[in-house]
Length: 178
Image (cartoon, rainbow, N blue to C red):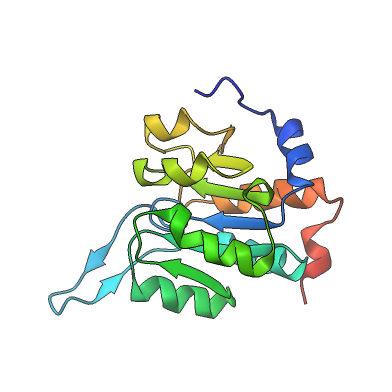
């Protein structure tokens, strides 16, 4: 594990400078499973609470972006349903994938929190201000992050992180429920 692993309280403090929450999909917003039908139809299992809290975070003013090395129509459909505007997919180099968005939003890498889980995520984790792993991440990825969630990917890890974000900004998620 990283020698700079943060406590929950330290994580809350770090979240005060974060303007963008970037999320990997497979293994973070899903349980790392993909279902394929005989006709090639792809289906994924997304956690409803993770998505609901993403919506609340966006309503609070936090930018949310999807950063996935693999293109998936199922991801497009789910993110459209949630109203996520920044859906970046289909490029293995996630640093290059997110750079144009950061330029557009005038956000530095130091103002980005990234939640990943796999070896492909190490490059972006090394650039952002707040790299986070879900509990069931690859060991080599955990070695480069500053915080590991209690929940596993696809099972409330993103909600957990967003709850900490709300604590950091001194707001309650219920304030953004309409």
